[in-house]
Length: 117
Image (cartoon, rainbow, N blue to C red; front, side):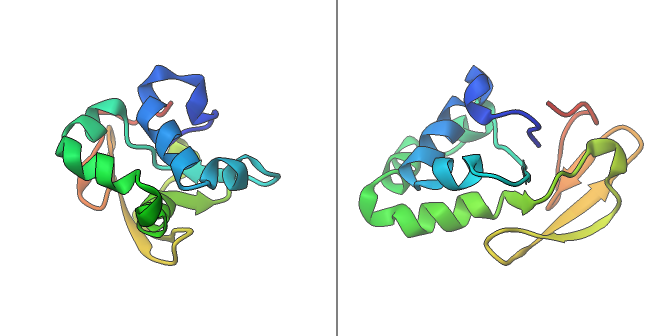
């Protein structure tokens, strides 16, 4: 989850490009608070290159928007305040949160630590 603008870091450069391609950079940069459960460069690197390239095409903008909005929650969620349960994402689906003493899980994928950038 990101508490700063994703463009502030090279860790999120692919995410920043995807937000621009989906025209979400303007929406999420507008007034209001959002929490982005942001995939890092490492996570994007695990995707087949052709899948990411296809998603970035203009004809796939709605699919990309939905995928990205699945990683966004309205409001400010702080790691220290998270509890087990579901949160509604901006694409209308639920994201399952699992909190352990030293890590946070999102839909079964765990961060190595509760350190959140």
